[in-house]
Image 1 (cartoon, rainbow, N blue to C red):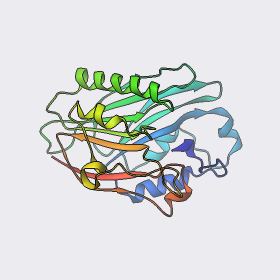
Image 2 (cartoon, helix red, strand yellow):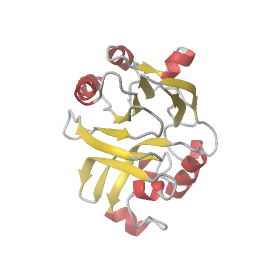
Image 3 (cartoon, one colour):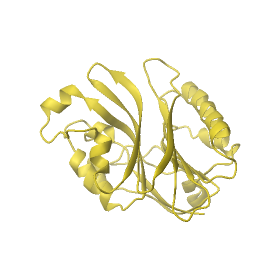
Image 4 (cartoon, rainbow, N blue to C red):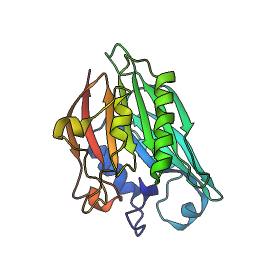
Length: 237
């Protein structure tokens, strides 16, 4: 989300983001860097929403939403969010911060998908900038999955892994996860920077579900809305 601003913070694009995400017709949306509150921005920028960014984005399209507060500062706070057209039966936010000045989290939501015999577990991820921190955070993620996600349950793990060295794949493969772009095309997707994607930072991993037609959303309008290119995939049991 880049907190609702364009890549270089030149424009406030939250309304355009809501329109673009809505046009994707996604049932479930995993977001990072979502502002829950910012007192200074709310008085500076025209058309700033009265409520949180995740509530503004959900609007009437996604009846359920969850927010995981990660970073807190004098003006407000931001974190991960999940929007869903299906009921959210339960959600937890797990603090996986390793360095006190770089707050990171995992937002775990359990969704009641109609006609699915088991709920869908979704973990919205935003990992650290340093590889040593990411290694520790991946181990904390594995612990969350072991403790809170049944081995036979449908599972989606997605978000900004900041894993430009692509070292997360082997770690998560041990937990039965497979990355949807690697499965389909042999390599993780290039998603950053959005205007000329070179680095493979963002991921979608699944377990106990079939993933079809993974794609990176590039070009207008996405190229002027954030610093990362968003990704999409169809899931089936």
